[in-house]
Image (cartoon, rainbow, N blue to C red; front, side):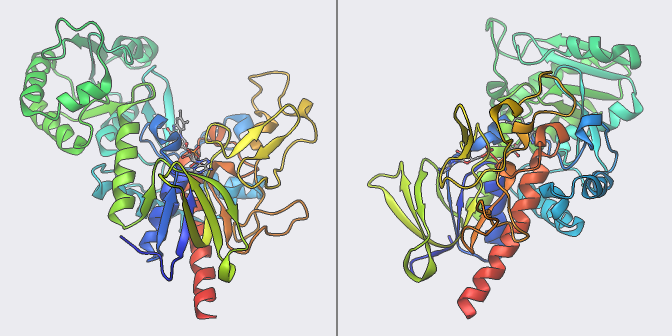
Length: 434
Ligand SMILES: Cc1cc2nc3c(=O)[nH]c(=O)nc-3n(C[C@H](O)[C@H](O)[C@H](O)COP(=O)(O)OP(=O)(O)OC[C@H]3O[C@@H](n4cnc5c(N)ncnc54)[C@H](O)[C@@H]3O)c2cc1C
């Protein structure tokens, strides 16, 4: 575990969603002592797929094969978008570092390269993404080549229907068919849950019985797709056992949130940050934050820790998310930043928050509200000045982006975390040596 030097942490990360996890990971990898405060955020609802930049401009729904070409277009068309302000080299380094950490924590990713991939969703639509877990990547190849493919589901698992996917896609994929099997030992159970199946498949006996049920269904198929239930903490091992047992590539399709891949991702990130010595306060919240502490430190007051806790830090990374994360709140008139009351860039009036057409392709202005930052990722006050020299803001709380529409959620989190931690490291070195 890294320790606070002279009673203060180099970095205090507020938030444990994708951006807070990435910042904690990168800070520890740079040798900075780091404390992270907060619980899992939106990660639990994620699919394990790491989007970088899939759609640009979002209003036109233009899907890009290369996320880096999409980012170059973004830089030309929306230079104030946070992802347009991180150079491609840093984004590559950030993603490599992030997936390497996930691999060491039990979720191997397919080599990233320079291209987006298309993957199947649980309702038979196609999603464009960048980082694909190895257990899902055969599905991306299958979607391209459309070989004979068997999709299988389990009776009682309501979150996933192979039949529905075939109904949606079958017309353009003649070799696609589906089967339904009983999950071993669950013949009398009316409703099954993906996480329970995933845990059960970590035992060799259940795995072998499931593989034995699948073998007679294979016929001449080249690839088999299953709901994402191939193990919880040991998914690489379970996936490999299915491929060996069936003798064809096997891929997982994420089920509806909260999905097993979301649980795996959260578990792997928790393990990765802890293994790098990040000190975590999982059930705590930062109640207040003051910057006039001794020696130019930030003082954070925590709640949810028995007896309360006061934390001193040389730098602070605000990774508190948007409305669901609680980083932003909205009352009848304005959007506010929840912890410090920071200036929020937003439409001039509430009437301008939403378009009249809920499904308008250009999205809603409220989704692009958020914090403005300078080139060093420091939030700006209403006068355009940094609030504090070593307060940084990252992830979905930032203004000028609509990550859902651009398919860039993880990319925004990972890239801005990398860039802000680079700045924090620079500032801390200057403070310590100066
Ligand atoms: C349903 C769903 C599906 C998704 N699917 C994908 C996907 O397929 N691919 C992809 O790339 N991305 C996906 N994402 C997006 C991604 O996982 C992240 O949620 C997104 O990038 C935002 O992350 P964030 O860290 O900025 O915010 P959040 O995830 O909202 O995290 C904010 C954190 O801050 C904490 N916090 C707030 N205030 C305080 C405080 N005062 N003290 C301490 N902690 C505080 C919250 O508890 C939370 O932990 C999905 C997200 C959702 C919700």
